[in-house]
Length: 232
Image (cartoon, rainbow, N blue to C red; front, top):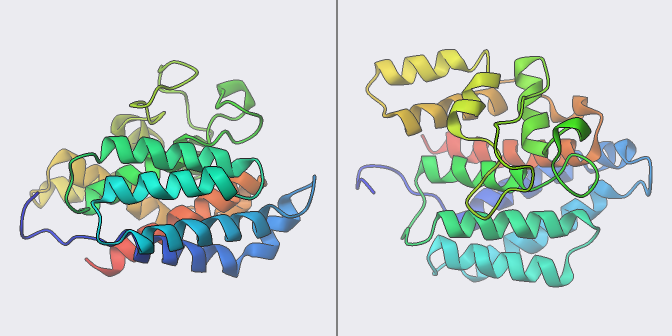
């Protein structure tokens, strides 16, 4: 990791996600036609994640994420909590060995987290709307995101979409990618800037997804990425 790159604290990032989600808790509840409490459940789940990460703030990111995953799996609220626990665990595997998080790591974390959550049902399937990541990014491109050709049931190293797939659906944010490349950013950093641009630049309103999982997931992503942008 380059020493001149800023690093990011997991507890602070998820604290920002908690704030974003809490502000729209009732709106997410209103999208939940089953129990009407998805917003309430996710606020409590993200609060649990945040406290867990803060408790392990002195540990490497992978260890803190593993701990948060275990805590969420054990005491999370609602069925969706188990998908978030899986996403945290997958992110931990991808970040193994990293002493701290840089901006690209944060974007990777967001991708891993949202790709683990089916927009409905129990497995991310294209015919059922795919993952929450695909649905949220589909809003940016004006059409549902297409599957990446990966297996229908991703393994631990499969986030569901690679950076090329993300850029393929981020039509307005593609400009941010090109601008970043022109200023000398490497491909991963430029792709991260493009993803961040779409989720923080007013191009995506997760509440318009009409789906409580996508709405909550999008709000969490926006909160994290807005915290990322505030440090740049």
